[in-house]
Length: 584
Image 1: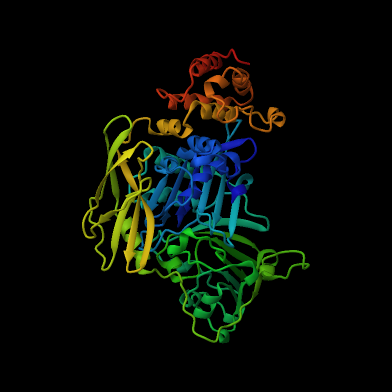
Image 2: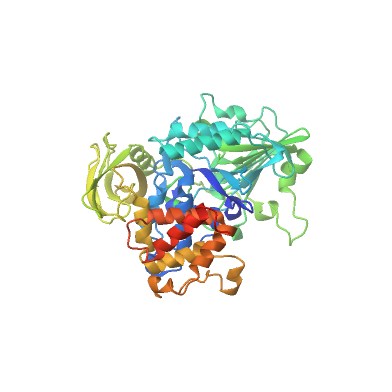
């Protein structure tokens, strides 16, 4: 996904709207780096300190990203980065529920890029991959805006309706950005992938009618790729079994189909996969290594229709879940089932058929961990659907008291025990089911968080997940003060500035570090030897947008001790010179 989220050459991110079923906050944390650096920065420093590049990308782009995710499916972060950094993601993380009682399951990104000439372009990504670090065989399609393209019917309306699914009102700036992207995408034209001539989007689970109506009325040949299967859904496909090819997990093929049906049953080669993990279950924090792609190919006459997206071949996907499918039309000879399943031209080449093998039917009954919910799965979504408020009381400049509350009582489910804690703090608080949540905890500025962790237990089974609380009384300048604490000292600030001011041409001669001082050299003393003025002047000429970023940084660090003596005055002179146009 890295290259699909990377802006075009000479462009920068203006806005990003994403949807995902499961959300890993660690993965969300590095998306800004992908959008600004085209790579994931390493931690690079000891003690869990925030990498400077990641901190900069967060500061610049976090407010430009909004991600909608199924309530109850936000995983507890396990990475070693400072949990204070998740504060930058609070407003942009939007838990939602599906209006028909299923799950919110679409995986897509709507990206708007700003170009240096003042124009904007868009990219749409539709996939089967969640915003996690899971490793699996997925299907992903990216479409860029182009003059030779066509409007993508249905997608803009999908974006416009997303805020209506949220548990709480979106922050005003995020709501306006989502609606703005929907408006501009409605006017954009997108180029279908090679081999296809038309495209449109189908959104499932947000209308009054059954989405099974989308299945074609007449099909000559069909291919269905889906890790989860339900025989009842396959029975709705209007085709003889011997004209159907199904690619799925071995267990689902044995559970839902039988050899005497006569359909072609295929699975991934075992040397290419590890143990599968149920996407819908509690294992979302563990990497998937099996099949996760969802593809439907229907041949009719000389034409072929391909669907790619989030929907499995299950009744839940087409009855109650919110799903998204990109429909592509092409010729049967170029994009049909036979093309998908043709053998590779040589053993050295890889294509879709080369990663598959014929399924060997089991002689014993198979029970699958399929899409069906477990009791804990349903319980976590019920608990997560109760909105939480976080009321902040400012005790002094750096100390706070936070009261996490729900207006509605938490579900009273037989045998379920629940504990809660703020994401940034240790120590659990027992919560009574059937009663409203009321948890008060002291916190420092870094410990202040709008993310709350729930732990549910039933017997020996347990699950943890994150809910987002609506924060009231958030301290003024919270993010700027957090940046100051994450930068920690003047030395790191100077290194950060030199990072912002680095020049690709000059950096070929100084190992790419922008001439930054080594750690521990002393920020104030470094000012006497570093060519900051030259760097500022060069940036004003070559990268004027960087000057604006630095001005905002100094505004964020107002009244902190991170800025060394003399630097603020030096910057004020540079900023004034830039504003009156005397720097060339």
